[in-house]
Amino acid sequence: MELVWAPVAAGALILALRAWRRYRAVGFRWGAQANLLAECSRLFEKKRYSDAAKLLSNYVDRHPKASHVVYSRLGAAYFYSSRYKEAHRALQTAVSGNPHDRWAEGLLGCTLRFVGDDMGAKATVARALDELSEERRLTLLRWWARASEDANDSEAAAAAYEKILHECPADFRSACGLAMSSLRLGRRVVAKEVFLKALAAAPEMERARILAAHAENGDFQNAVKYAKLAGDLAPPEQAEERKRRIDQYERGEPYRIRYDQPTGRPPSNLPGEPEV
Image (cartoon, rainbow, N blue to C red):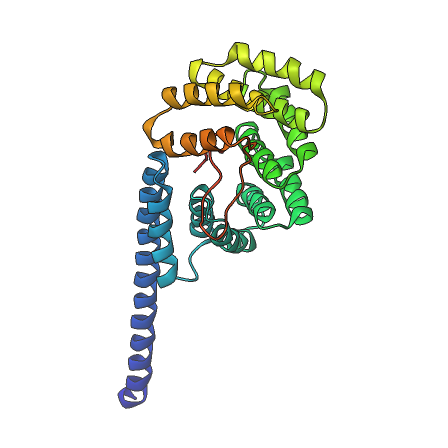
């Protein structure tokens, strides 16, 4: 009898050991993932998005079946680093893993606009906006407005800025964006009214920046003057971007933000603070 049960007991022991190893492995992965996300949150708070992208990318290379949360954070890190193709792929994986992640879906919509899929972008962002919290909805609207400007869709940009200002009238950056979009659409009266309100509410550096943008409508002499003032008031990390803008004004060229794919130059001054 003992000889009969010995192989059965041995087999059961082997299966139990295998189950224990799997349990330990899964527990280790979840623990590692929790530590990873905590470190990622710390990097996001410091706006070190490139470092977060590298950290997360290394993790998914080792664990391609990582949770949708990891891919969502990876997509956001790529997006905030202006690496839109990589962001697009990561966010697609995140949304496939969790179709109810509206923030990931909204960022995915913005990446679609940057890579040229305007119809898909509009539908995706619209779905996300319907279910996001007020704070995240406003932030996504700011990213969407900038993406629309990048796609030369002033109507969509103006509509997004109007929605932001309806809920947050003191948002002077959005007011400036609406003024510029209105100018491009030929709505000069609306542009002037919005611009003057934005100008009155803006702090000194932003006021100079708004004046430079408004002067861009053809008065390049004042555009150079105000852009230099904005450059003097801007933090050091924005110096290169400010110089680029002044150089274009001095050549008599209107400044337009575009994503330069060959060089990887990101759009500057994207609105709103990215969310973790």
